[in-house]
Amino acid sequence: METSTIIIGFVAGTIGFGYFVYGKKQSRVVPMISGAGLMFIPYLVEDWLILLLVCVVLLLLPFVIKS
View 1 (cartoon, rainbow, N blue to C red):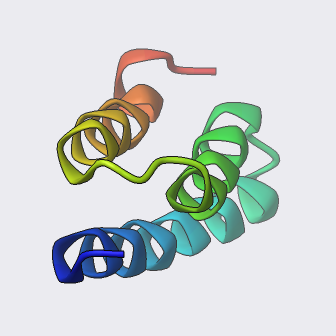
View 2: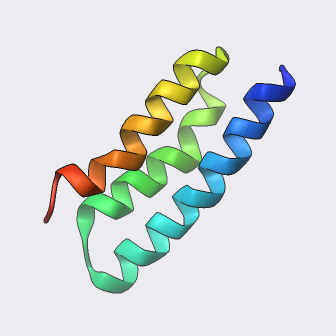
């Protein structure tokens, strides 16, 4: 694993945890799914560029889809 992949995964996981907790407290599905994805996706993707793009999409998803 590269250092950049580890750093991106750590930041994404931390933000994902915040999204998940927020979604659970507010009973909102989209932030919960986005947060779970942000916490889980770094385990599946090895390339840092693809990981960064997927994480940015998951970060913006709750702002695009309002439920």
